[in-house]
Image 1 (cartoon, rainbow, N blue to C red):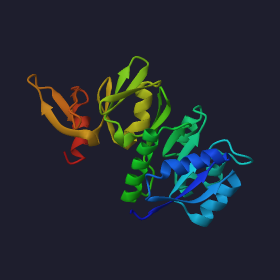
Image 2: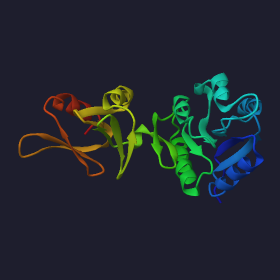
Image 3: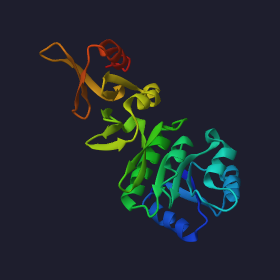
Image 4: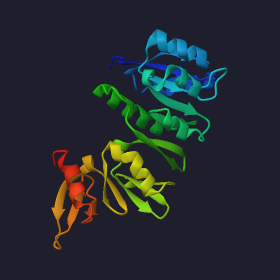
Length: 241
């Protein structure tokens, strides 16, 4: 039987919600709940007493809410935070607070498992900082996606479409505005309507017309404009490709 490697604190003022997290964590024995908290004051005390690796945090709690917990503690001194709440309208604030994920109750077992898989990977790698993420709307609420999982981003009129494998998500933000946010995290403009995560480029190829094509690990082919060719190639070569 796997030995518990990572300590977990669960914070929610509703006993049923805390019980739900306990049930969802059963298939993940490497995570062990060391404390359950009913309000923000208990959370702050638990963070000092137990030094958890992961905090499942409700937003609306008595006296001190989830965001105030992070403000008082400061994001740099927080463990990996997963918001678990009945409200989907706070996802952007959660992203700004550097949360690992944002789960809307009732959360499905599959959605919860995806979060735990990502947490286990990050904790195993011993990452000293949180992955840079982006919040995207879905039919089931808002999903917080690490930028390292995004393959490329294309312009779609006044929106931007994020491609993750074969899935895509529409974000109500222009490509120009999005470029300013993601460029420091490994994205480069391939042409007027495409941003590419350079770490996901498998190969650069020349086509019959002498143009440049970026072949992604997913198999997607992105043309690189002549204007962007030099800068894009330099960004890819810097990755050792």
